[in-house]
Structure formats: C-alpha cells, structure tokens
Image (cartoon, rainbow, N blue to C red):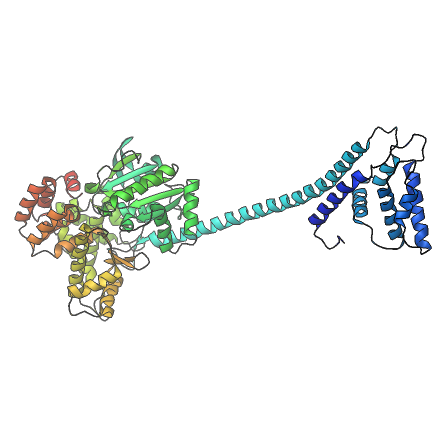
Length: 621
C-alpha cells in the first residue's frame, strides 16, 4: 500500500500509525511474576497462525484473541490479533499490515526487536509501559533524524559544490570582462589623430610628454603621476588646450598597457566626458555603465558594480566646465553622493580654470593646476611629434629654431594643444610666423578642411567651413537654453541645420553626406553616444568657429557675451585675435569683466609679444 508513495510521506504515515498503535499494546492487567512470559504466548499465537494457514483454514484473529484474553502475561487482545494476522498473511505470502511495516522498518533500521521488548516486560521490570512508549518514540526519532540528517548532509555538499563552481565561474567571467575592457581602452584611447598625419597618429603611451601640477597642499610642483598616486580624490584645473582630456585618456590606459606604471594595474578606470550628463535623466552610476555600453563593453553593469563594491574603480571625469548651467548642480550632487557612498573609489576630475567655482571643496583631497610646457617639454614633444618611427630630425631642428626666433610662437607653444597645432602647420605648409593663437587655429582648420581635396570630395571647402561656423554658433547659443548641451547636438538636429547654413542642400541625404564627409576627412567633428550625437573634436575648435561666424558682426558677439558670458568668453577672446581692430569689443568687455578684457587685449594681433609666460597662462585660462 505504501510502496508507491514518496519516501517523506511514507515515513510520516508510518510514524503516525506507530505512535497510535503503541499505547494499545499496554492495555490489560499487569502480569504476575510467576506467569508465563509474553514471548511464549506470542510464539504460540504465531504458531497457531502458521498452522491455520497450512491447513487452509480461514483466518480467525478474533477467536484467537478471545482465546488468550486472560493470558498470564497481560497481553492485550488487540496486540494478539495484530500478531496473528501478520503471521497468517506472511505464511500465505500476503502483504503485512501498516503497523507491521512500521515495526519491521524500525527493527531493521535500529537492530532492536520491538516485539521481544514488549513480550519480555513483566511485573518486576524497571520499565513501565509509559517508559516503553517513550523509548519507542526515541527510536522513531533516531530513525527519522538519521534520514533527515543524511538528506541535509547531501544537500549541504551539493550546495557547497554549487557555490564553489559559481564562484569559480564568476571569477573567470570577471577576468574575461576585464580583459575585454582593457582591449576597448587600447582601441579607444591608444592613439590621437587630431592635428596629426593620418598615417602617423600620436601613440598616447610612447609619444606623450608628461605634465606637472602646481598649487598642491604637499608640494608646490608635482608630476601628474605622483599627484594621482598621492591623492585619492584629485581635481585638476587648467587653461584650454592644457592637456586635461589627453591626460585622462592616458590614465585610462594604465590598467590596459604594461608599459605604464603610475597607476596600479588592478584598477578599473572609467573615463566619462561630463558633457554626456547634459539633459540626461539618469544618475551618474548608470551613465558610467552607459558609457561602457557605447564602447561595446560586455557586462558593463557588472564591471561598474564590481569596481564600486571592491573599491578598484578609478573614476575619470572630464570637463566639469562642459556641463550646462541647468545640469551642473545636479551632476555635482551625483558626484558627491557616489564618492561619499564608496569611499575607496579613486577619482580625477578636470575643469577649465576660469569655470571652476570651488564646488568640490571638501569632496576632493586636493586641487592642482596643470602647468604649461617648459623648454625641455617643448623639445621632447617636437622630437616625438608624428611618432617615433616617423620622426624627422631635420624638421624637428627647424621647428626648434623657428620657436627660438619667434617669441610669440614660443609663448603659445607652452600650451600643449597650441604646440601640436604649430607643429602640424609647420609640417603641412611651412607657414611663417603667425601673431595670435586665433590665427594659428584658423590656419590649422583651413588645412584640415582642405585635406584630401579632389575626387574624394563631394562638397567644397567653403561649404564645409560655412556649415561648421553655423553649427558652432548654434551650439553655443544653445548653452542658454534649458536641457541643451553646449558642446554636442543630436545628429538629426545637425542635419536640419545644414539647410539653414546652406539653403541649396535641403535633402536629408545631402545633409548627412556633408556631415559624414567632414567627420571622415577633417576629424573636426566626431560622432559620440553610439553615433547619435555629434560634437567638435575639441571645445577650442568650436569656440574658434563660433567666433569666425561673427567676424563681421561685433554687435551680435557682444549681445551673446552679455547674455551668457560663460559660454561666449573664450570665443570673444579668439575673435579679438582674428579681426584687425577689436578695440570697441575690448573696451566693452573691459567694463563688464576686466580680467576677460585684459585677456582679449592679449589675444589681439599686437599684444602678445613680450608678455611673461605665466601671464600668458593666466590670460588663456
């Protein structure tokens, strides 16, 4: 009857039947000390059952029980009937009763004969029937406890093995994710092509010239690598083109390239351009994972969560100044919250010097200012420019001589980006000395726009320049509108602006074709955010082109500066270096903001020569 039941249910039924049946065995008078033993009586009952079965007589359990009602051992008629029935069925080859199954299982599992124990009890025994019942219950408990413990033990082993295998799998998976991410870092940040020969991009590991930081609490001047090691949370401010973004790219490579040693190899660097947070309705933690997803990193969420929980994350936040005025406050709250919740996470944040307002005081361990190149740095940069394999000693010597003979160019070359532009122009056209930063920017952009002119060009250089100027002005005008990014714009909107700048190009295919050609052949525009957003390769390029769009409209320039000085301050400076007579703009800006007015004067065509290098740094910030 019980053979088809599940083992746990079967055991439960047997236990219940046994507990109910056991007290029935104690019903009846207490036997006399001189009486026959219960074992003898039970043997007689069993023999009678075997005889009846052998003689093919009907089972007569009730009659036998009544026959032994007044036995000397005090056995109950119920027990006698059960014993007879079991033995009769067994002799006939039939299944025994539930009670007998229970007794058999207990006896087999414990090695203890319940029948013999019951049969051996007499008046002089130290055990009462109550004691016997308790002992039976103890045996049952031992039996079932043994089964449960064995089951739990098996499950425990299984669980332990499962956890071990899962942990091993997770470790392997984590190593695979990290290995894949390091390949992405090398692909994303290993080379720089802006203002370079396309065949010889800058290797960020081998061709990079290190920067120094000044103004730190523990040292007046410190190498950037030392500063990042020394301070867990570091804010770096600097002038436009001082190398802030390139520095963070190099820091991001530290865990991916064995040639770098400033940061521990076990760190997990994540570089996030903060302009991505403009108008983004998601917190910083999610944006970090989105950035990795844009780079096609598998397991982005797992990598970020692991880096935060283990304290191995190196958070590289580039361009605090590129946040719009509507998003800056809540992004700063996000940064403070994340760093407060995960105190072991390291962080390096960059910001343009003129745009920093001490918002991270108490959050970062130190604030340092990136210094410009000294003469040795300039020499090292020129030696490495274009890549070590493409180095041109004769060209390098000519450029060194040129800088030595032209103080204006030499002062501008203290800025890493301007030195790169100067080297790019000299290598491309051998242009003679230009007087202002703005003129160098204009020359470099013209060279890039005219690059690969010929059969590969569907659109003219003039069309590209007009569109770039319009787009730059449009983006900076958007800095005053809520939810709009100052330094990037969706591709769909950029395509719409093509028709505004160039009325003859009204078709969508033509607009997208123009943008694609600029991206591929000039590198002045980049696609980001999975190809859905377009931005200028560097903010200075956008600011120059916005200024160039207003060369004949100084009133429009001043109106914009008055309405949003932070967005247009750099463009006003550059504008003053492009036009022949910026006196009215300089006077107006001088009244509104004297430091910016002085910088505008320094940017003008005749005011750069002879200025001290430190003042050049300050005015260009």
